[in-house]
Image (cartoon, rainbow, N blue to C red; front, side, top):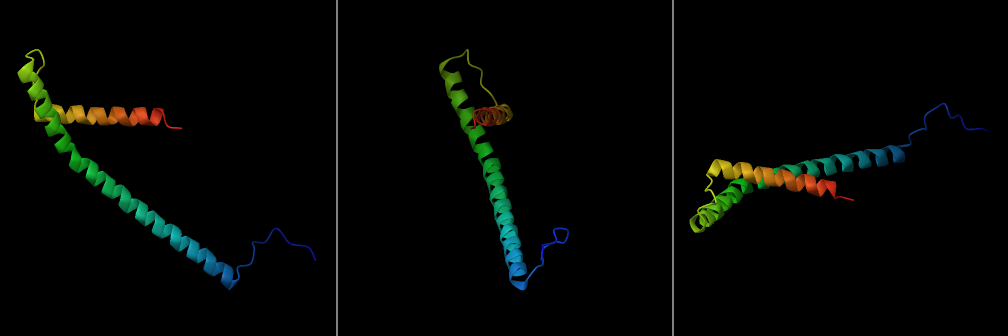
Length: 97
């Protein structure tokens, strides 16, 4: 008796249970990955004001020592931090194996 390749394979209850279990595991893994991505986004957004404030203080200190260095405000320091983060991300992606 030859096998008919035009028909899909028959699903036995055992095989169907395995397929369902694998689908459930993949669904749970996707939920965990989504939660991890959301947490990473929240941490990065929460760290942005702190980084900008530290940059603003550092440039203020350098401005106090050397008048040629301009003092920058909070908004400008946020833009500098965003630019530095974008540049670091592009550079990291460029040199990724």
